[in-house]
Image (cartoon, rainbow, N blue to C red; front, side):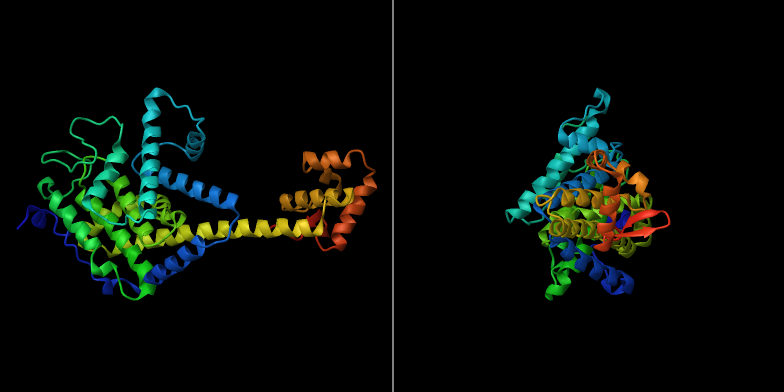
Length: 375
């Protein structure tokens, strides 16, 4: 009998999915459907680039934050733009974020090139990149398994069993349980696979540092390998960061009860919550694009000055998202003030009436309000 079988009996590499509660199966189906919808959402090239970059930055920051990094979203944006300047004592925070960015992109490049194989070596490479160029003590060796007697923040499996356990973990994750024959089960089972991979790597705790970030990169690889797009495959990390306190307690709770199912349930719930949030954001982008196209069809600024002026007027009233008294309307924006400053006050009144007749505005007790373009 190996030592870990006595000290860590929950490392059984077994799971009875028949006991997974029906609501969790429903969430798995919901996650699969939303993942496909979000991945195939029609966006303009610029919106696609911005959305993907924003999710990447948020996921990297979330993963770093769960391991103690204190950088803020604005810091990451400035860092990506090359304008962030932190004191020398805090520059390691930038290195942590950079390491995660490089590891995430490396994973995406590997999967895109067809290298979907999950091996202990790949997991070691994740950890090596996560810890690269960071100031660690002499006991921490990036990308190398933890040594006997090495003290870590979380007590993992016995160090002498780590190589065997990591081989077993990869064999299990590459096994038939997570490769179902019916195609409609593929994504739901991949989500279960990713959650279990995450849980088991934290339980084993194979490295001296960076196990949490490594686990989230492993999870990302599995989701990408199943065909999920990067923007979707990064969302579990963001979702878990939103339930950070619960997430941190689940590892010990599931070990004590020798039951990984609660972790799967919380993991999938966090993923679905994040998918739904992102889908609402995509719907808003699509609505704005449709609204802009409607404006282009209704007002051609190149035809008359009236059309250009009325379009600007409507855009500013839409942006206000509330009724605005006619006397206050020119103050909604500098562009509007410039347009109406040299004109007779009746011009504004005529423009408001024209937009009302076309069905764009309505008159309320508090002023004029846009009927379209905002919710």
